[in-house]
Image (cartoon, rainbow, N blue to C red; front, side, top):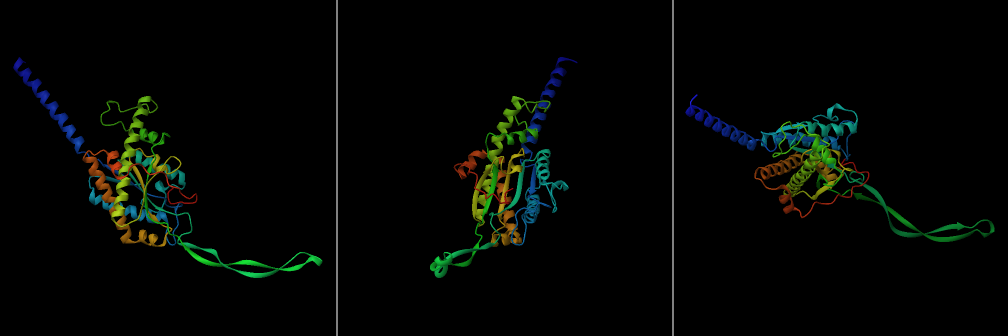
Length: 341
C-alpha cells in the first residue's frame, strides 16, 4: 500500500470515528429524559389504606393511577410506563404489607426508572365525615344528699347542661411528599442499587464496589441531584392543583421514619396525596370522574413542565427555589393517620 492510499485510509478512519461519536452523542441527546416512569397506586388487597365514608384509599388510588397511565401514554408516547399494581391486590401478588413495600421499590430500581410517582389519599386521623361531641350550654340546680346517718342533709348544687353537636371533619386539600435530604444515607443506598454512574463518569466495566469510597461519593452526589428534581416536580404538581382551584397544603418532606418508597427508590420520586378521603366533599370529589380527570390533568401538566425543564437544561434546584424559598418542613401527622403510609 503506497503512502497516498495509507493516508486516505487513515483519513477515512478518522472521519468514520468522528461520525460514530457524533451519532452516539446525538442518540444520547435524543434519548427521552423520562424513558421509564413508575406509577405506584398506594396500598391494595389486604391493605385498604385510609377509610372514607364509602370508599377506601386503595380503590381511589388505583382508579386515579390507571387514568394517569392512560393520559401519560397519550401525552408522552416515548415513555415506558410501569405499574406496581393494576388490580385490587398488593403488588407482586404478595400477602405481606412490608414485603409489598419492598417490592414496589425493587421493581422501580430494577427497571432503572427515571421517575417514581406514588398516588395516595390523605386522612385526618379523625372519624371520616365528622362526629358528635358534647358541649355545655348552661347549668341547672340539683338537690343532692350528703353525709351519713344523723348528719345526712340536703344540698343544692349546680350541674352543667350538655347538648350533642355535629363536628364536621374539615381537613382537606392536596399535599405532595418528597424524601428529606439528610445524612441518613437511605436514599444513597437505593441510588447505588440502581447502578447509576452518571453521564461523565468513566467506568468501562460499569461494575462498581458499592461499598467503596468512590461509590459512596457518587451516591451522595446523586442524592442531591434527585432531591432537587423531586422538589421541582412536587412544586409543579402543587402549582397545577392550585391552578385548578384546589387547596394546596404544600410540598412536605419525610425522612427514613416516613415513607418507604420515597427513600428506597434510586430516582426522583414523589408521593401525591390527591385529597382527604375523610372529608365528605373531598371524598366525593376524588371518587368522581370529573375529580379524577382533573387530578390526572394536574399531574400530567406538572410532569410535562418538569420534562421541559430537564430538556431545556434548567437547574431543578434553582427552578424549585424560585417557587419556594426553602423546602417545607415535615408536617405534623396524627399518629393514627394512615393516609401517608
